[in-house]
Image 1 (cartoon, rainbow, N blue to C red):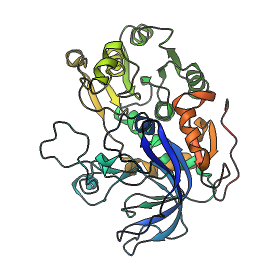
Image 2: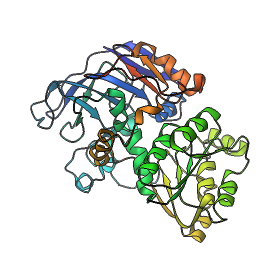
Image 3: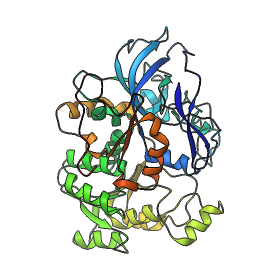
Image 4: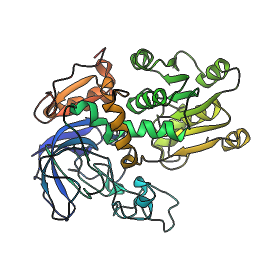
Length: 405
């Protein structure tokens, strides 16, 4: 089969690799009908994620048709169309029983990314995301092995295009969990840092939950323009406004927002000093976005962090967070918890996650897709790929490109 493989920083290749096979009783083999490039994939592409081996297959946002099932699979059948969550969870351990699926204790033979680890077990394995998270082959491929298929794949009813439900695999639940963690509700004021796919899904989810005002901070004018037109955000371009948090405070009666969502993470555009410290491995992550989130949030408010962080941050300003009495919530997404409810919202027409798609490409153009997405070319917001070409999903008519695509 064809699959996208990692070789080095900014060196990914579409290659012929062996077809996946059933290895465990609860495995399925999936024929991929749609996959996407995630902002988290760009961390790997840019060489920011350790423990990657040459030949590793990338991709953790995918869906498709069940081709083969192991003898222990009871929840899905051959021929069904399913979306697969990016977290691999057993469904039976302590954390899975508490619906904390991203903390599953049994699916990651890697060490995880905690620095001060002690003897704590690693969290859940992830598809296509380094040997820190289990070394599982990803779904930017024609076929993929899906372990633990009794606790993950969600069967999709007929009549929905792949593009409408594909993002249930990661960015839609991630944006939704960010809004839920921020306790967003009717009348809430929200600041979202980052207008990438997760930031846009957080805006869509905040609107769904009843937010009254949403500020969105980014420096790509086309992304801010799309977010304003689609989700009614109040855009703030930090290339034009030096201190977005100060602007947000002024616009909220010098109080701040109820919730700030950091959808940027450790690759935030920070200071020259932070960039140098990160390069020298003296800094784990840029603290620019999290500092802005702390500053923009009112006393007693919540800072919700779906953006990926690793290691330590020198300029965290925890004293400010303490003095303001802020609550912090973050971490990997408990995807399986949110998928069924979000599917209901899609079926009811209350969420249209496919609106953010700007590029449909065949799988054989995936390397170009990475370049376009990484370099923000062609007003790229989100790239969706299909192994058989940029065609319709199973059982549905083709969807037009989103406005501005």
